Image (cartoon, rainbow, N blue to C red):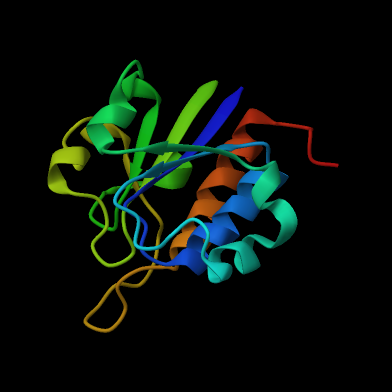
Length: 156
């Protein structure tokens, strides 16, 4: 089983720090796609990730195209408020890449077109004032759905 979290151009260091901590606690790999909206040595990033930063398995890519090399699109799940399929309706396989866009804009259309059957959303109220959930919360919800479906027992 391989669970991978992919953040495309994340902007807020505290969100990424929280996600680092979640990845360490679930033995997940974190993939960061540049440009990042912060430096990896920022205090706020490390404060949110606490002392888990050195335990994290983090891979960094210059672009989304570089990330795609040697990966299977069928293993990728793209999270967007524009999808019609709920994250709980997906059937996650043994190798999973959960892909999330930047906090202010989400994923680009070109990325969402790569495998539209795997575009997923979180059920939520969306209107003029409510746009989306916090990125680190969304990552945690999706990640734990994969863990639930895979019946992983490494969590004691």
